[in-house]
Image (cartoon, rainbow, N blue to C red; front, side, top):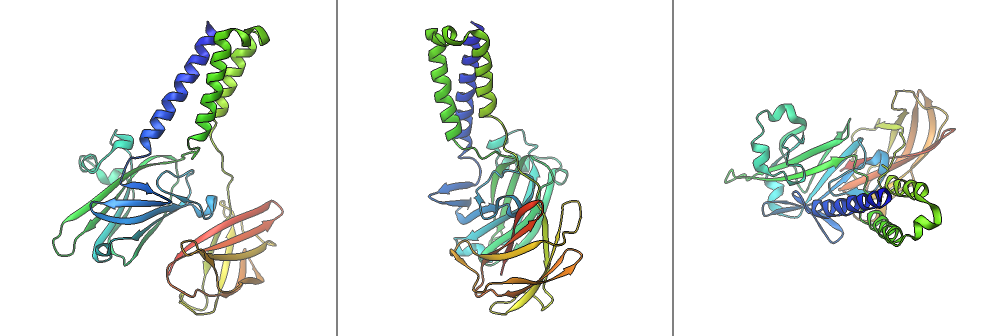
Length: 322
């Protein structure tokens, strides 16, 4: 009876998780349409994506992100009116108690919004693309709030998207496969075959192992930090120039003697850099001279830095909006 109860509890737990995940997928102001994530600010629409360049490279997320790290939020306007509107962006800790079902009314009801806010960018007019960069220092449940003010009527349109930092990103398949395994296990238990084959103790252990494997969190390794300066002046279109890359650990230890390779491109246009930049000199103190950088058009670029040291290979993506 104890074994049957364990398998039954696991089965119920799997069904509950699947139900919650399916219903959570349609929350907030961001929806998936085909291969695109679309934010709806009332009747206004924008392509929306989040990048975590240090841990996930080019991978895009609609809302939930896997780890507390540098995160780049990008909105590419689909509606021309957004280009003329003053847009602000706020991230708050979820103090509403509504979780995935939080709405703008719940945000308005927060008595001390400033104390719940972890990031705020004041209203600004950004043509075509709106981008912010924020580094999360802790995992948890957050709510993003985007507001756009019409320049003529003064009316404010808002979108709310609850999201989780530290989301495993497992999707449906592991749960579905695990569910099938548990259904089969339940059948064998009810028929008495598993008990006859292995005995109660082994069956109980197997049930526990299945549950633990299904819900074990995904881990991410720490990465290096790369910053850059441009001795030749500000970045400009169709101008050949050089960078100084500075590489250090998260603890501030400068990385010397590394092999540094650089490539990049525009993910939205599916093409790379027009040149082949390369590191021509190590300057010491974690600095490396990079020559041959050029961008031939405006838009969102990613510069991918591959660093090889005695500890292995680290890949860091630097997002740029030109």
